[in-house]
Image 1 (tube, rainbow, N blue to C red):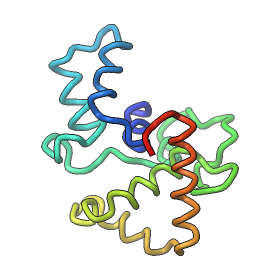
Image 2 (cartoon, one colour):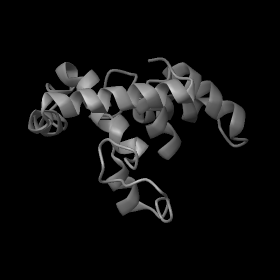
Image 3 (cartoon, one colour):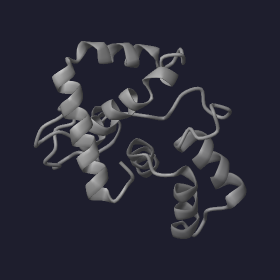
Image 4 (cartoon, rainbow, N blue to C red):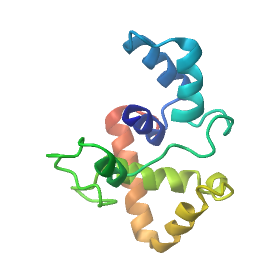
Amino acid sequence: MVTGLYAMLLGVEPKQVHDWYLAVYVDAVECVELPNTLGMSQFADGGLMASKPYAATGQYIDRMSGYCKGCRYDPKQRSGETACLFTTLYRDFLMRHADRLAKNPHMALQVRNLGRLDDDEKLTIRDAARSIRTRSGSPT
């Protein structure tokens, strides 16, 4: 879940994610992995398998797992030196896909909540996300 989420938020090409999963997981079987990756993890099938993108902030990961214990990043921060990468990328993902996601009843509220952010904060989030993608070698 976490690797797929990170790849989707970064904007990695879904076929590359699929190929990577097949290469690194010895028990990956393409007839199961392909629809799960493209349909659920990457929301790359137009919503056939999942009703919404499986997108989440660092706060969700913190609440649902133990991955955040001891991490220097704050899952509640959207931007700044201590902002969680997942939280920053999530907000950027919503902004990049706002037109499409606003039409999805499961995502419309999250998109509307972007309206609470002023233009300066949105620009800061976009710049931070671009920096994260650059550092990770993903397309900007």
